[in-house]
Image 1 (spheres, one colour):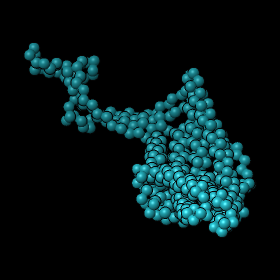
Image 2 (cartoon, helix red, strand yellow):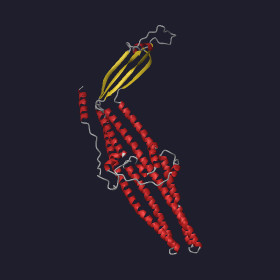
Image 3 (cartoon, one colour):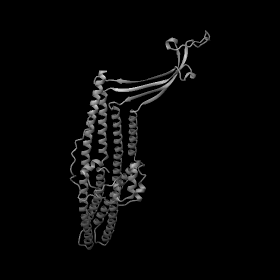
Length: 466
């Protein structure tokens, strides 16, 4: 009795002085170094609408529902929520029923006597054999005096919160992947349009050179050079179309379709994407927005709750059990009477000697808390790195686009001047070829810089948590 009192006193002390949840060691910067000055403070949950493409809007909405990874994460959430319900039921009494039918032989040894006068040498029934029918209910309830079961229930709740954040994280990643591949499709189409325009221009120039060669104003060498230039431009198309189709196939799979299912729909709704405004990136807000960081926070809380439950295994467990029912030798005897039985009472179990098993489990749970803390800190640093990279990449892509726009304008003027001088006989054909190659290269670089700007915008929204 004295030992029990000591355990109770220690348990009360444990509850009163329960440890507080540890805090991760994270240094949050005041602001991001590459934050653009014209960034908007508004971050829409449907950020993809800034691209101005209704088909992309449809794909992004579908991606959040039908993607197989999203659905798998949803099934995991349902599993964890069911486990949380199971953890809650551990706080309540467990009531069951049992019944049995036994054929007994042994008379006094079994506590049952039933004479059978008709028995004899030809009778197969023993004079001391009888049937016993019993039925009843049993109950077990653990009084959660020190809160071990409540800690387990709390951990299950945090697991459910982490699973819910995991669904949001998967949705963010999938939507970012859909948007990135959609940009790739439109970027390939943009470059293909540039190539086709250059092909038409190269064909016109080839016809001009042939006419001049027939008139003796140009050489066959000029004709062959222009034919080679035309072939080199035409050879770019298959590679761009391959990039386009690969992105189309990826979008189909991301939306739970077979790879080519969306090809006609994408080709029918071709168009150039707008560039959305850059969202403001506040470091402290990133921690609140990103579902992977919120998931890591829930994992810390779950690990800490399980560590608290493990500590409570050092203290007594109080269980109340009960049993009631009826026993008789035939069905008609299952009525109120002397065959009724009833039992109820408390039970106490005390850990005395377990050779360090409980202590080792506590140490393991504490190590899991430490792992969760370090994972949280790692996720925060990765989030800040991802955001900084996206901000600087978007900024440099905008600078590159501005310079390439100037370069393309100058290259077009250069081509026009070179052609005019060539037609007048004041310039050679090599100058025309060089000017055309430079214009074509700059136009492709400009198209690539536009798509890079869109990709980096997608990456920025993803880094901010979608």
